[in-house]
Image: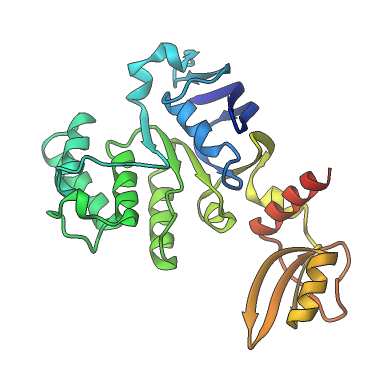
Length: 295
């Protein structure tokens, strides 16, 4: 099973949202990582069929090796999709449970199988919420979780999820990420995110996007391995930190007892007391975008 994207381009008045994007997605969790406006959401909309590209095409190859353009698969392709868009407005006349029951029915689930999956999704994604509460009364964050549940229902083999961890606290984020990993085996899962830490919780493969272009695509361990021995942790005053930001690539910051804690990407120690530390995805992300900016 493959989703093959060939030379996709999409342009708006503000500029190119996607510029000759090509990639082959296989059964794994692929995270599109980049800043807002880099084309992640537009790509998901094109993959879902909600948008039509100006040029290029998307092809789906099934388990039998039959490969056709997704537009020609039509309804058969859409039945394979679970799509969580960036902006979502669930039907406001439903309660939480009624909405998921409705989505399960549309997916062809009935009886005990439907009740089991709806109950499981509610328990994982909305455990604190009253199931008979009208959807229109939910906060934005709860609606996002309900939208994620709707995308997962029916176990579709192709999942397109736009910022599924956005707005969650650390505990809930870890719980939802673990659940997504557990239900992703054997599926093509494509997730859009602008947060490296979220991507690290989810990804088998990471794709860096900048201004509609694909910078690179690789497993997290390959991206971070390139920075082995080049990431440093140090403590500095506000004045020292300002100077370091001007002279080095700072990939992360924190605070400790009034001082700044900095992660710095550099070939040599940026200060005599800097300690080497293991690189993480946020370091690779900062380095990749810094190199592109200066190219």
